[in-house]
Amino acid sequence: MKDHTSAAGGYFDPSACDIDAFHALIARETTADMCPSAADIQCKIPIYDMAALRPDLAAHDSRRALMSEWTQVMMSGPGAVVLKRAYADTDVIDEATQIFDAIIAEEKADQGGGANHFAAAGANARIWNVQEKLCLRAPDVFVRYFANTTLDAISEAWLGRGYQMTSQVNLVRPGGAAQEAHRDYHLGFMTTEEAAGFPIHMHLLSPLLTLQGAVAHCDMPVASGPTQLLPYSQAYPQGYVAFRLPAFRAAFAAAAVQLPLEKGDALFFNPALFHAAGANRTTDIARMANLMQVSSPMGRSLEKLDRLAMAKAIYPHLGQVSGLAQVAAVAAAAEGYPFPTNLDADPPVGGLAPESDQALLLRALDTGMSADEVNAALDAAASKRG
Image (cartoon, rainbow, N blue to C red; front, side, top):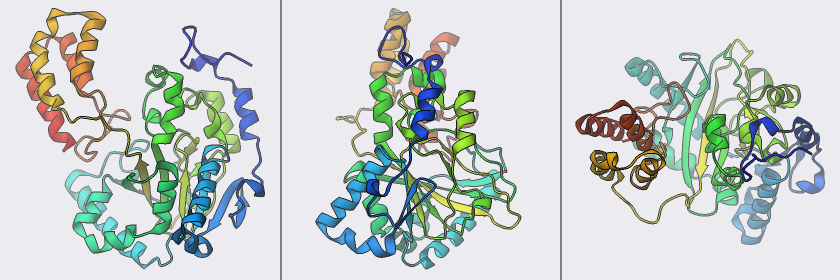
């Protein structure tokens, strides 16, 4: 077995990723004893019939048992669950779809359509921050849409109470191409070099901070391109530095599975699972899903600081120090992470994440920007975040 850490220890080295170990992981099979509440297992993924299981969510013991099963499936099992009939009544899905269609048309008229992480401009349609947009435009629809005990239970199962729900609508039109295999937020939104700069324990922690899900807003036969999933790939610890490597992408292409979904079904998976939206090979299905990215309530600092004011205050004095000492001073004051942000105003154009204030300050030092120029740039960045 190869050494998967760097020479310094404690860090993953992309060049040391072991494709044979990866193949051994993804060759595992899913057995009924791993998911006793599932109605079926298809392509290694357990299928849960929420029409039958929904009453179990109302009682403490049966709710805990089902949530524990889902967690184990997503943690150490195949990594994903399909929740059939997550919506008992799909009328509210149709109402929300009409609102989403209207928002897409309005945003295309106003802005030409929202930027997208993985698709060429115009190839599909994306609504960022649809959570807030739906809530403020049609709060009655929002309440009925999210008054969903299945979505609540799967989110609580992975993240505990107090989770933070966000969602983004994705519409893939006929002919829309497939995505490349990837992992998701947080480390999955970084370059390989950036991810490799985080210690191993952060690679293990990152998937536990978010949960990925999607609610089908139309019937999705496999030809329409529902999400491609590679069961058990979330268990490969080095996956955040491996998913772009050709051998790993080839393994994904050879072994990824797709499951058809019906309107009102939900798919949830560990964000470390290798996955990618499929190609829409139909001529008549515009595949719409509400993509849910649910976050832990615990990824927050103890105190609320005005880091924008702090960044402005320190910039004129950073010339007192240099090199790594300068980087350390910037890290103590300025915001080092570009999320959360308003992805309508601050889209990930040219990459997967906008520039952080720390990166802006360091760039300003390198290029000799004046304090007034830095203040204006910081204000402009803050206004985009909303």
